[in-house]
Image (tube, rainbow, N blue to C red; front, top):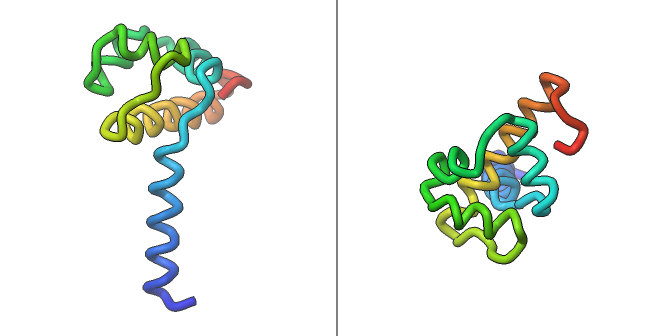
Amino acid sequence: MTSAQKVLTDALARRRWRRRLPDREEARAIRRAAGLSIAEIALIVGVSRPTVSLWEAGRRRPSSAHLPIYAGLLRRLAAELRRDGGTEAA
């Protein structure tokens, strides 16, 4: 594999990783363990509070525009919680 192919492969892997969304129970557990409210998550992601509630209830999925933001936020929170020993659910 050339270095250009490696760079492209790594970039695509990072992109897929950001789009993976934890299941709804895990997303809720991560948010709660991080001490964030639904309203705070909504503000960070740029959506309404009811939208995040629907995501956590499993009744809707984030749009293609919001999915990488929401999934990335949850992944970062989970990583911080693991690093700090905050939760097993993350």
